[in-house]
Length: 219
Image (tube, rainbow, N blue to C red; front, side, top):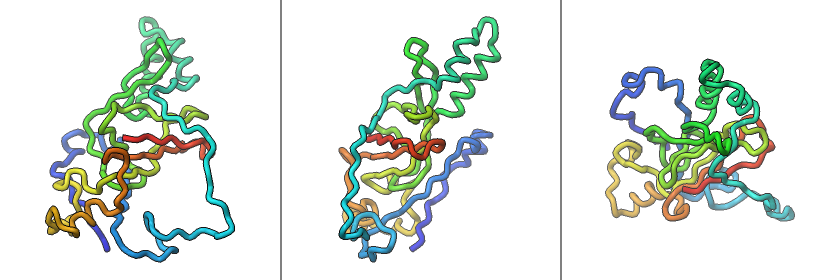
């Protein structure tokens, strides 16, 4: 079944020229309840796994840092560039951070940490691969690789609900569903997975170091 997300109610690139350069593609998975074959793509349900192979277990410590250090090379450039004497070099280093760290809002020179903030965005809700992460319960924070310091990208979002704002994100094909009915619940909360207190889990990966550990952030 094909599900179609309605277009936004306004032309964002026309209102903010150039913002399209900051766009990120998100693939909405639209899980719906059913009885999939174990070989088919699905969330939950039967799993195709060798009977004689042990279930994988992770012994590593998963880090969810609140603040992350500015990459050493950029920090060195910031330290060398005195705004009073060489503003162009300082500005270039800051611009590089702003282009690489999602939600970048400045540098705390006392700690060497990159700090973040978020302009108003409307990331797609529901289970999705890629796209922008939402920050509904905390301030945005940089998610940087613990190996190389590169900004990490969202790999997977696990959401307690599919629609967020139904007027914006409910597929047109499901507009007819009435709240309170089993059919409505099956579409708006198809997996039955509740992340935390009806929130989100997001998994971030490093695009530069595939072997680096992922970061998990609950919201």
